[in-house]
Image (cartoon, rainbow, N blue to C red; front, top):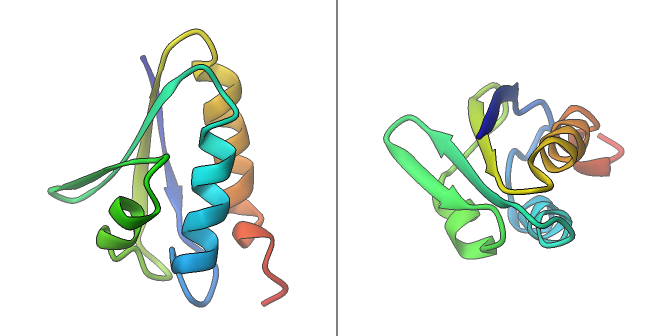
Length: 89
């Protein structure tokens, strides 16, 4: 099991498009990926669950990856969050 904490930096936070992007990325790996924010948790492959985290700009999320592709999954998700979900603003 691998984990890291990332800061949500994009203006709109983990909104519908960003959650969809994250879910699509998570399904590309042979790993179970879960995001935690406070007491809430969400499977990374579920857009609805990700939206229910209500992760807004400035909040930290903990990403936990388990499985054969845990390291590449954690790296890719970390890059996506750091790149503000590939949003221009």
